[in-house]
Length: 229
Image 1: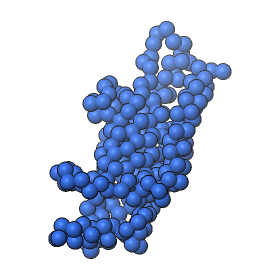
Image 2 (image 1 turned 90 degrees about the vertical axis):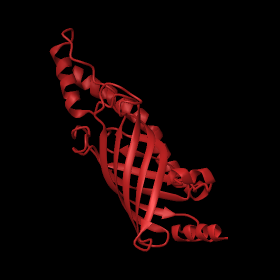
Image 3 (image 1 turned 30 degrees about the vertical axis):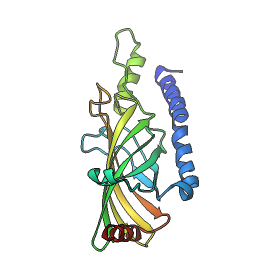
């Protein structure tokens, strides 16, 4: 077996093993959503798009994505940071490239008679991709150095196992409980929770959202009524 083939087999084993929690989390989110969630979102995305400082289209897609949005907590101090909701979710890459799981905060704003909304996300994820490709070495064989060059072209060097995730979302309410969304997300460590390589990852996707319990309009109406008392 060549050095390149051995590296591929080893990486495939690590990726499959590390990707299992992400797959399990996405499946579990669909099961627990009616019990613990305010909203569940599921869909797909294009992986590693070549813009806004991403990984230069090194990896391939597509991804399966799912989020569980937890019920909003009506604590008074949360108004100072815009009353965000907490989400838990992840992305599984179907080409055996980088998958991730994580959590974060989501801020949503409705407009145009509550038919449209915009949302911003900021969170933390753990991924199963490459942290750093080893440097070329004169002690390596030619085949080993060629394999490392190919890895540099085909893999994203994240520089850290854990990353920040930021995202923007545009949604449209097609029913009181159903919505369609388009989203863009960016993953990187920002030289804050990691150092060295920071190629990052850009994904662009679409998904369906289903809300459990009261609709968003009903929740806002109740809050306004409570404030008016």
